[in-house]
Image (tube, rainbow, N blue to C red):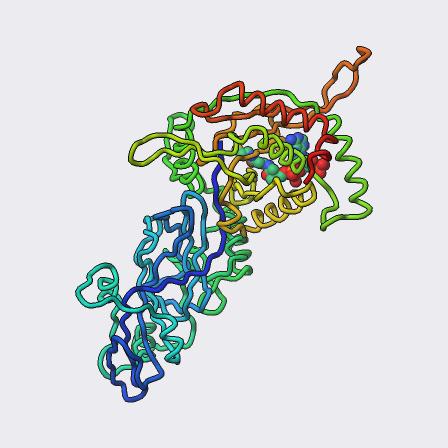
Length: 494
Ligand code: COA
């Protein structure tokens, strides 16, 4: 399949470069001095700070720069978005820890950026107080130590020409002599304009490249209206150009290479890795009739008196709980395979919590957020967490925490269609359950009369290196019994 952990979670970037150089501007006198250790008398300052790409978790050492939201000389405020990066697990928006002016982008979009290395230089300007500056700077490495700190130090030192203050240099760089203007510089082209996450989400919904849009907001910020205007103009230019388009030539075969989208590229990598696992597929039909009537009864109750903001239950909380109950008897399905890096010797790592990943179809693609510690939750609590994750996923607001730590996955494709699945196991897991469409089928009752039955197929994939067929079948049988007789769950509730 499919299973790609990804998100557009927003993280604040706070990195302390080792050995930060400081250039102090002496206000109107226009003199400069460089201080390595102290902040002396001046209050106005310029500090070009190489910002390090923060650790985004789960041992990720590099990630792809998907897009920049800034360009050199763009003014950024604290928490302004800088760029979006994509790791194997998540797409993450990096925001600035500092207000200042962007001086250098260390990577182009599409490049792989190293975690812990500088990815952007920001000139932190203004009336910073001594305490603030000290809070922003890390202790400098001692001379002769070498290492990245020194390299950064050299790279980041930016000293305006003598006699000019930081502000005058900035103004001159912005506009040619005689054409200085207070108007914000348009930030279009290769670098995306400044835009809020909501605006970028809207741009994704309309499949619009935000870098193509001229922002009319502050500092060239792209606004929602800009996106709507762009979409309208795109529609009309498409309509206008249609009659002049040449007809598609079907007489000869034409092959057009198309780049993978970021999500596809990540799926490509993750699924290629997952397919190194020998998959064992096991599928069975489950009678959902009792589950159907239990859910109908509970939903009547919830409709009249919602609990924990839940006024309706889907089938998922019951299925998720049934999987967790089966894991008590078959903990191997909650384990992961570990291969010793030195000896290559495989082992199993058992995990105490049942953290169940849920494959979700969202506007930005397939995401797999995780419901943590299902064993300690009741049906309402699972439903509530599922709703929270669904809402966050739809809004592009899942955090890396929401997307990490899964121990087994459930993928319910049945609300879209399909009876059988061949689900692909997620890395660091050994099993996944695929749920097909619940459908009404004819069946015989105990008196051999034809009756209506709700049937659904459960398709399991397990890592055949560590899970044998009989174990998978027995565990699947436990889940089947619980789902077919859901009242039994009451006995196991904690
Ligand atoms: N068969 C038939 N109907 C189903 C169903 C199934 N297997 N699963 C859900 N439905 C129904 C629900 O009952 C609900 O209908 P109702 O309100 O009339 O009862 C409707 O479909 C919508 O349910 P949904 O809002 O999707 O909630 P959910 O809790 O059942 O599912 C998700 C939540 C996140 C799993 C689901 O929305 C989703 O994204 N599924 C796709 C996952 C995916 O893409 N997997 C494939 C990976 S390759």
